[in-house]
Structures are given as C-alpha cells and as structure tokens.
Picture 1: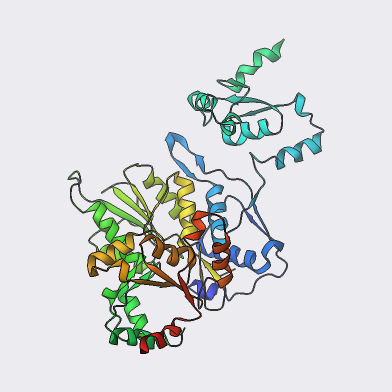
Picture 2: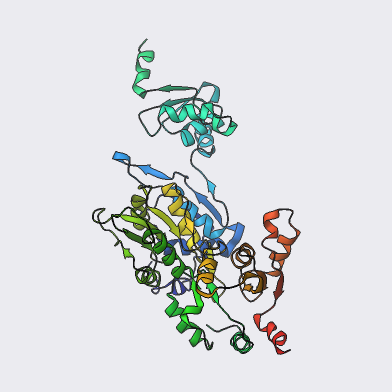
Length: 178
Length: 267
C-alpha cells in the first residue's frame, strides 16, 4: 500500500490490519525504514501475542570475488533491536527445519549424514541434531577455519567441527560405485 | 508539539541565576540551526545553536577529527557515506567533509567512513552500498547514537539509529563507533567549547539508558525527569538489581517534571 505521507509521523497513522498476529522477516531486497516501522507497530500493538519470526540469521550472501550482499540476519537484527525482543529463528542452525524433515520422512538421525559448506549453519545444525556431519570445501569454508575451532578450548566452537570433510561432494561417487 | 509546561520558565530562571544551560541530544535528524529554531518556536528564549550539542553535530566533529585532523597519509581526507537525512548531511558538510552519493559506482575518491544516523529513507540497497565501502578495513563505521526507538507524540514508537546500525554491523562484521549518549564523546565536545566542570554540573534527562548513564560516565550528578521515555519503576528495577552495570543507570535524583526545580531556584 502507498505510504500516507512523507514522514514516519504520517505512516504511523495508517490503520493496522487487525488480523495480523505475526511478523515474519525473510530476505527482502526491498527492505526499508517504512517496513521496519510497520513491523514495530504490529509487535508493539500485541506484545507477546504477535509472533516475531525470522527465516534465518545469515549475515551475508556471498558473491563471486569475495563480495557479498547483506543477509536476512541483518534485517532480523534491525527488527529485534527496534522491538527490543528476540525473534524465533526457523532456519539452520536451529533444529526446527530438521524436525520438519524428520517428521515428514521418518528420518533416523543415527543413519543420516548432513552435508554442507557452512560451519555455523549446516554443520552446527547437523551436530546439534545428532547427525553425522560432512563438510564440503567447495563453498564458504576453508579447512583452516575448522582447525581453528578444533584447536580452541571452547565447547561451543567444537560444535562447529564436522565429523568428515571432502574437497567436493563429487568425491563421494567412488564409494557409491561399488 | 509543546514544551513541557514550565520548562521555558525554568531555563529563564537558570539564566537569571547565572547558571549555564547546555543541551545534549542524541537526535541525528536535525542540524543545530534547526534545533535552535525549534527551541524558539516552543517558547524558549536565549537558546542558541552553540548551546546545543546534537549527535549529528558531534558525529561530524568526530569525523572531521579522524579524517581531516593532524596526520593522515596525504592522499586526501576521503568521502563520507551518510545514512541519514538532510540535517545530518548538512552537519557533515559544514564540518568540511565531502559526501559520497547514493548509488554511486565505487570509483573516485575513496570513502573513508560510513556514518549511520536516523534514516527514514533507509533501504536494503543503501545497506548493501555501505557494506561495499566497509570491506576496506580503513573505512570507519560510525553511528550517531545507539537509540533503538524514539517515542512519537501519540505514544507510538519509531525505529531509531540503533536498529539500523545493528543491520550494518551484522552485514559488515564490524562494530560501530557510537558518538552519542551514553558514550562520552559529546561531553568532550561540550568541554572543549565551554570548559564545563563536571563537579558543578547536573545532567537532566528522561532516558535512563542514554541520559543517566551518560551523566554517570562523565562524572556528573544526574536527575531523571519523568515526563519522557523512562518510568520510575524502571529506575527502581535497576536500583534493585544485583548487577554493577545496572547501578550506573540509577539517577541521583528524579522529578516528575523539570518544572519542579523552579521553587529550588527561588531561594
């Protein structure tokens, strides 16, 4: 809907939809202060009766050449800061999505391998859900990073260490050819 | 929009008693010239721009110091990418700095600072542009103030600079240098211009997490006025807390309204 005026003082006069009971923050390349303002209004109107949900906390979406664009996590943080409350995060490393998959497909964690390229989402979720974890090095993570976590004295960082790693997921093919 | 009843009279009494009144605000929307006009419209007499220290002004002074002040490698001060409105941009220009434009290609004079202020035109595109500049570790990330939200006159809230800064910090992996209260840089600006003695200065404010903590950090006695953001119960909760940090948010005194100080000046 068009904004009812040029300034926030005008925007906050627009009526709120009485049926709204959740604010969901996902990747939004059209994120704006006006939307942030509106999200805050819904969250303040209903307090705990309006859910605040974020799809994920990724900081950046990497592009070629080391560049990147801001990730959903930035937008979630903006809303959380304005509203002074924490969002429920659906995406990895939280286990919600694994629970969805496991429920739908009768997945047995003891007989499941989680493959991913990112330690703080893929591997952490896999480890937290009791899966065997396999890191592929074709993505954002370099082996040095893993060694750093492994050598640290910190239990939280050990959760980021995969059980196995491969240079590429294609390296699994020979094992399946037998 | 009205002044708190009795506030203009209090300031007049202070003036007549020979007590200086200075204003320190986390507001990064307006230039101090605009704030001077606003004070005048609200019925305050004798409040000049030089008495008003806003986070917009002080951020510009901070950047001037860092980018133009002494030393440097001789390749020019560089430009500043400002996330904020015309009031903030004006203060940065008045400090002698050049601004990077929105949507500009990353060529030309390097951007040496990203300044996050109150920006009601904030967009994902500007966030991405800021992050591009911040890939250079030499590029500063500065925020005018940490406020998560500001009250509107009808009791609603509008997101503050703090929420935008959180987005930029998350995207860039950097921590911002925050100019505004409760950090003490704005007090340094005040001392430099007016030579204030902390032991003979009272900080009055309505927000515990910014004004009162600022007072404490600068060695000032503090008064909380209850006509604004913070409730007495919040101050009491900090007082009852076991955490040492919470104690710093407890004001020395509180008043229902700043006008309650007037009788004290009559003696």
